[in-house]
Amino acid sequence: MDRDTKALVDEGPLSTIRTRHLFTIQLDVRPVVTVGSTPNGFRRVGFVTGGEIVGERIRGKVLNEANDWQVKRPDGSLTLDVRLVIETDRGMLVTMTYRGVRHGPADVIDRLKRGEIVDPASYYFRIAPTFEAADADLAWLNGILAIGTGHRFPQGPIYNVFEVL
Image (cartoon, rainbow, N blue to C red; front, side, top):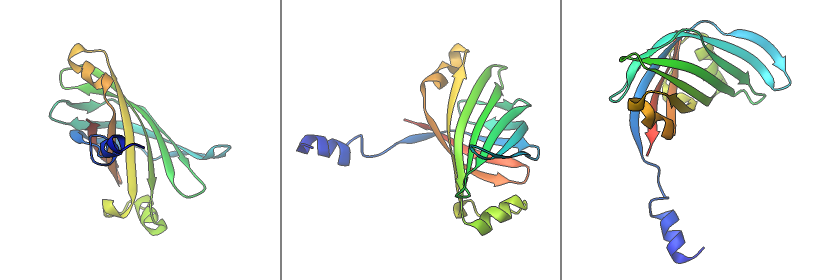
């Protein structure tokens, strides 16, 4: 790698990722349904019954009956594949799809399963959402990537979602 390229990668605009808070989303969920061991891992399906989204540029509610297709992998981590619909406070619909992963020390994950509140810094819970919006005022969502950090409460997860700039 030449000196100019190395400087660009090591010290320039490619050396960091900037983000901006997009919204906080809280999901209400029913208990997961266990499908069982499949060729892809131990399959569970979660059902989202609602929720709330609060941000400077977008706010609204999560519509009922979204799904979270989870796989518990042999290493104990949980992968998420979620599809939901947001209705903004102006009545516009936005789809949000995200994949994620949650893992941590076995004792922390066991406490989460029992519904105990744990320190969110004690385990890893991250998502990568994408969006689809038909409304012209929300079309900017179609062209962004986002990342989020989550925490699991007994009634459902909460995520802080950030636009990657």
